[in-house]
Image (cartoon, rainbow, N blue to C red):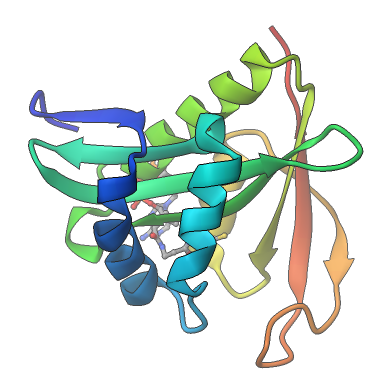
Length: 150
Ligand SMILES: CC(C)(COP(=O)(O)OP(=O)(O)OC[C@H]1O[C@@H](n2cnc3c(N)ncnc32)[C@H](O)[C@@H]1OP(=O)(O)O)[C@@H](O)C(=O)NCCC(=O)NCCS
């Protein structure tokens, strides 16, 4: 990341840019209303990477009923990938979960998404199991988790 770029909490007027990144990043994007709901309900767990006024990536999470943190979506604009922005977004949301006393994070990732799997493994996430037919195309997801420590 360059000096002009920073990781900060998402705001309502970032949502249009966030949705465009989502559409460019996933074959089955979340509908735009989901992001409004995420930001309204879970503002502590929604970060963007911003370079001056341009939003180039985001991560959004929530807290599960069992008290674990849940990563709901993570994406970086294709032209800004491979600059450790994804890694920094993940570190920001992990700090936020930790600050709220959350000790475990879970996420789902396509078993074919080698890039995201590399990123999560690099951050210390482990595979807990397979969720068969998790995605609309019938493909499976890995359920991954990480125990947080101070
Ligand atoms: C996954 C994604 C968010 C990664 O963002 P990024 O900013 O490009 O990733 P980073 O630069 O922080 O990379 C962190 C690590 O991930 C792995 N990684 C990232 N890009 C990779 C690639 N093209 N090939 C292999 N490994 C890669 C590497 O381990 C990398 O560490 P390194 O650069 O020290 O080797 C981005 O590729 C993306 O938006 N993909 C589409 C959406 C998606 O799949 N989201 C995850 C859903 S679960």
